[in-house]
Image (cartoon, rainbow, N blue to C red):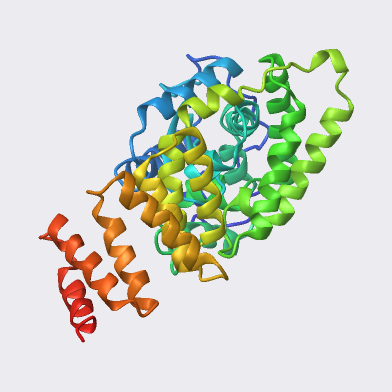
Length: 388
């Protein structure tokens, strides 16, 4: 095969003129090809950046649980010191992606969307196959025109204007895995082989389509559109169609029965709490309220998530939201009298409703509980507004 392009940067070297016909990883002692070694090195640089970022919050219970799902799926081993391991990233968007050396990143938004373990296992199995079948290597070798390569090399600028999103930290390898995805052929391969892993592990295969249908509904509902592969309407429709076809050809006796709802709900609350907070910051109040309610069903009486739910109502501003927020905040004040943020929000709500004496009382109580509050100056201004 003749090489049609000059060498331009790392990805040109990676793509080169090498064959895209590469076998899946099965031998842990096998050597990587030259361009594959460079690809792994690039991926590990990107992982170091992600792991050191504020998006990666260590949640041992959650990550150990996800690692357990991966182990249950029984993937073949990776070579060159690669190993499957999961990391949780605090980002409310629907996403998960695998690096070529086996690192799998799962967004809290995806965790919050899953109803049970089988649904999570569907996505994890799909990502495992991307690594096992060397899709990053195939993807770089499939690049054929210089414009596409340069666009990939410039992927670090993709996150401009998407403040507070993991996408800002992704390089070329992560962007291919997380944003652009792979060719339809490779994505379907990940579906099919992942489906076999899922059923062999005893999971209820019917949950696979339910997961992607729920993701599609959430992607369509979300006010803030996401660039990620698992957040785009066409790609999710492709996954649904692919898994429906796989399900239709599966003998009834071949599907397992494990759903793992109880197991997921036992470990989910820490990730759900972080995601609800991130969703509130994003301004998606409907989703924040739904997530906070789910959390409080699993862990009733948690003050911070009760506050997050109240704040979402207070900020959303729909009919009856102010009354609902007031009711929730007053209940929180009764159950957790030392919880300062509730006093601040009660003050803001009272001031907005023209109840200045109540507002002043809550603002003063807030400063008693938080004398060194970062927003002390603003609160003092509000207190002056409450004066007769």
